[in-house]
Amino acid sequence: MKGLGIVPVRTAVRIPWQNGIAERFVGNCRRDLLDQVIVLNGRHLKQLMAEYVHYYHDDRTHLGLGKIVLREHFNRSFVNEKCIPKMR
Image 1: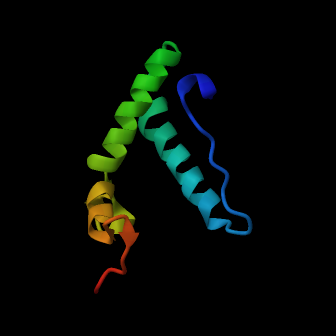
Image 2 (image 1 turned 180 degrees about the vertical axis):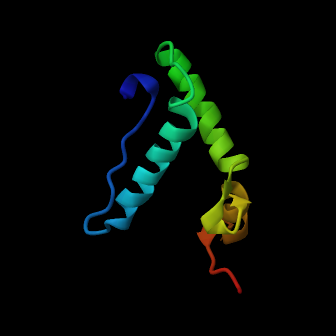
């Protein structure tokens, strides 16, 4: 993992929902990308993952967010790097 520039991040203690979020991303990545493509080598995998992360944040709609893209959700939720509650 270090060779690909991936830094592992531990989930917080006694907060099990964080593991579910990570597992959901891994499952989506596997279904959307890795089940569709034959990875040739580590460099190819790194390129594919970079493109997938860009797609996941900027183009893929998320049903749980009201079918908006993740980047738009974060632009609505964060101002000056501080989380503010969304008005309904």
